[in-house]
Length: 439
Image 1 (cartoon, helix red, strand yellow):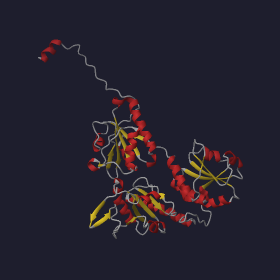
Image 2 (tube, rainbow, N blue to C red; image 1 turned 45 degrees about the vertical axis):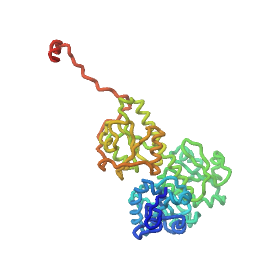
Image 3 (cartoon, rainbow, N blue to C red; image 1 turned 90 degrees about the horizontal axis):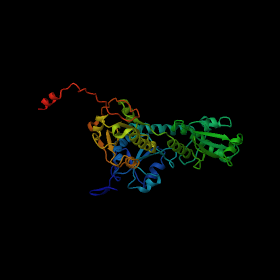
Image 4 (tube, rainbow, N blue to C red; image 1 turned 30 degrees about the horizontal axis):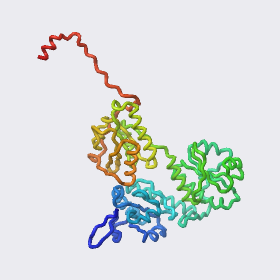
């Protein structure tokens, strides 16, 4: 929904001021289809562009940090913003499906990368400087991506492309824990020669951006013909994707560095193990989990006497499935037994009834959102999906500080037991005395 107000004349409102008016003190440039091509795509500068919707709560909270980061990076990297509600065609051009989405327009302006860092001004500045250093490294190595093509003055750092042979292929690729993108090539192949500098440059970026969890390799199919036959290689270059425990798949994407890097990052995200669902047994577990992630999802489960082990495990299994479904978000996942962390429940407005309950907490902003639907895969999915796109109501954590977390014993996985009542011997009590007491 586009919101408008009348101040002398009709002006479109945005999070960064009316589009027709840009204050000198505002270092975020409002972008639209009329100026996007000239300002961003034809510019030699690196750009970070936020696609937002005015009604989006997360976008509204990001605004002051985005402005602060723009001021800090002034003259180094440019920050812009696109009202995707008003400029749907521009947002659609870049596949925007949730808000806010931040894109990095770096070496190859035609293929921007997703910004995956934190949303505070400091995190934005740090993430931007990392991307800028990567861009400078590319330029030093002779690679430029402004037009989507490579320009290689040398061979780059070939050590990041692993040479695979009949002797090491099974050990490294099939029995390793990494995901591999493997190029089968022939030295005389013209297309292979064109791919080589792109493959080499991509290997450097992939190593950095996936922390070595995705690797790029190359097999000389004219030398290691057994490997080529094993995987049915009939043309060059052929690129195969190998994930542990799965059949190899053909890579049919683009052959430029950004295409290859984008595929590697997607593979990395898909193969990240789901986060562990941890019991809140002390302050360290709670603080470490909530401090390290943008959001921590906290469930308060019924007392073990109310559910037994099977009931509790059922709730935990639902949480694990949701943690796996949303693992790309890298959120923290926690749970506690009802009553064991009374201050935490109170700070979230849960306590005393309505178990199981769930809240998503942003400790940086000291705000939370409560699950209003059912504690089920469907209910939690709808809750988290709304959070992902900036919908859903939030409230401040009571007191504005992290609650006190008590140290408790970890659940042993067993059914609960009622406390054993002490036997009282009444054999020597005179009934006549009891009757007198009653009178």
